[in-house]
Length: 590
Image (cartoon, rainbow, N blue to C red; front, side):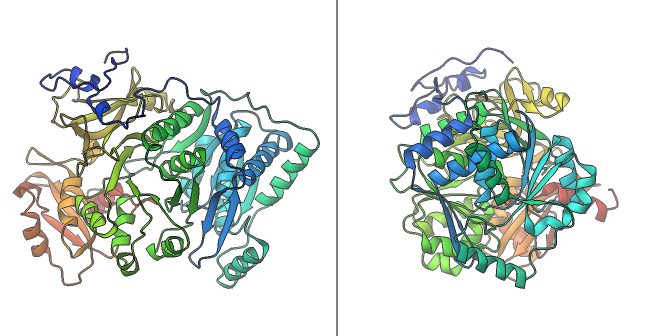
C-alpha cells in the first residue's frame, strides 16, 4: 500500500466506476458532514489527555460530571471540580507517595462507579499507563493482563477481592487498593449500601494486605498540601496512556497501546461530528462498562463538553436501568445490540419510553436490523450505528445525524480518517463489493504491547487492518458484513454469521442468537445457530421456514441448538470462539 496519505476532497464525489483506490480516497462521505464540521483536524488544542480534564473542570465547575445510579435508585454524584481535585490527589499519590515514574502501569478492575473516572483521569495526569481489567475475569485471565502489562498497582472492587490470593504471587503488583460502588456517596447513602452488601454477603474478606482507594486519595492530598506539584507538561501526545486489552472474542487478548494523541484525537473527532446536534442538556446513560473502550471513549467526549454521565454498575438484569431512566432526563444513550434488544423486551420500557432521549448510538457489535426497526417504533428515533475497535480508540465511523439514514450501515468515517476496502493481497475492491476494511487516522493505536509480530501484521504503512469484512456504497457509507475470522464456507460459498443472525433475530420468538460454522463432511462447514427463545413453543422447523424468507438455502442453518443463554462479552458481543470451542468438543474435534 502507498505510504502517502490520500488526497483530500471536500464535498466531492468519488469516481465510483473506478476499481482503484481513487473511489475511497476521494472521501465521498464528506458531503454528509454537518455544516460546521471540519474534514480534517489540524490542531487538537490539548497537550495531553489530562489537560482535557483540567480545562473542562475549570469551565464547568459545580455541574454534575458523574452520577452512579444503583438498581435501588440510590445515587452518588461528583461535580467537575470534585473530579479534578480527586484525580489530582490520585496522581500525586502515584507519583510522590508510591514513586511511580512516567510510563509505569497501573491497573483497575472494577465495574462502573465513581472511583473509575478518578482513577482514569488521575493516572493520565500522572503520566502512568492505565490497564483496564474486566472485573468478571477468571484468575488466569487476570494473571495474563497483570503479567503481560507488568502493572505495579492494582485498584480492585471489594466484591472480587477473594481472587487476589491466587493472582498476586504471580504478578509484579506492589500495591493493592480496594474500592466500593458506594465510595464518594453521601455518608448516609454509603452506610446504607454497605449494610445491604454485608447482609447479602456480597463483599468477601480480603485475603491479602490491601489499602483503601479513598485513603490513598487523602495521602495524595497531603502531598499536594506540602507543596508537591504535578508536572502538567511532562506528558506528551505521543506517550502511551493505556494498554487496552482486546476483547478476546476470536483469540487471546492483546494489549493495544493507545497514546494520548489517540484518545484526544478521537474525542475531537467525535465532538466534530456530534457537537452541532448535542442538546443543551447533555446527559448520557453509561450502562456499558467504562473498562471497555466504547464507554471509556464516550465518557471522555461528554466530559470535554460539560456532559453528565450516569453510571450503571451492571446492566444485567436490564431492569437495573429503570431507576436511571426515571430519575434523569437521559438524552444520549450509547449501547450495544443486546442492550437495545433487552430494553425492547421490558414492558416498563415499552409502555413509557424515555421522551428526552434524542440520540441513541449503537456500537461494539452489529445492530440487527430487526432491533433497529423496533427501537425506532418504540422510542421515536433511530439507532445511529457507529463502528470502532479497541485499536482505534475506538471510533472510526458513525451514522450522520441529519444525513440520509441507511439501515444496517455503520455510517461515514470521522474527520482525519481514511478508509479503504481491500482483498487478501491488499488490492482495492470495487465499490459495493465486500473486502477487508483498512483505516488510517490519528486514532489508530501505536501497536500491540510487546508484540511486534502482531503489530506488523495489523498495521502496514499506517493502515490498520481491522479484520472486518465490509463494503462501501456510492455515497461513501460503510457496511460491516462480518468478522473475517468468523466467515463460514459452505460448499465453497461464503456465509457471514451476522447476516444469518440478523435474519433469525427477526423472528418474534427469538430473544438472542449466535451463529458459527462447524465442520461438516459433506459441505466442509455447516451453519449452526444457537438460539435463546422468547416463545417456549418455538421449533427448529419454524426457524428454518422463517430463514428461507431472507436467506438462500446454503445460508439457512443446518443445525439449530436451543439453550437458556449464549456466552457474551461484558458489552454483549456473542463469544463465537466459545461457541466454536464447545461445538468442536461436542463433535470430538477439539
